[in-house]
Length: 130
Image (cartoon, rainbow, N blue to C red; front, side, top):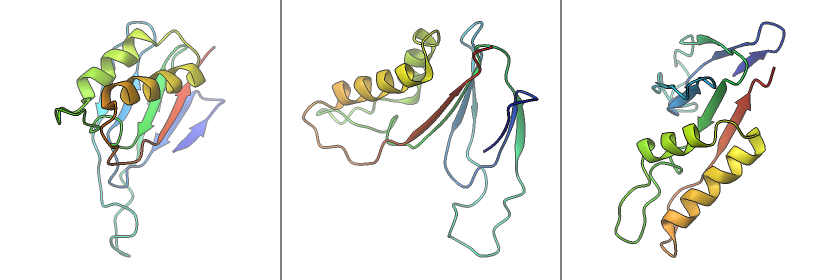
């Protein structure tokens, strides 16, 4: 993730993680950018020249997260899901980045309940505020 604060843009490179979510602050539309390429460490000959560029308008978000957020299962083994996560993001898009991250964590934790968490929940949340 190479952020250019002057140009309000970022070059992203996927290394097998995904998806990266790009949310438009104005209307809450979310573009899901699928994982591309091999995960880091799998091959010394990996091709990591698959970067893509996004430009942030005021209120736009970039969200890079591990699958622990959307694959978290409740006691009935139902995943939290990417669709539910995207609904949460849209509903909370007017908040600060720190608050959005806390909402994501709280929602998934509540969904899982007493069921043991099977994976990490790691996220980077970026918001252009002006």
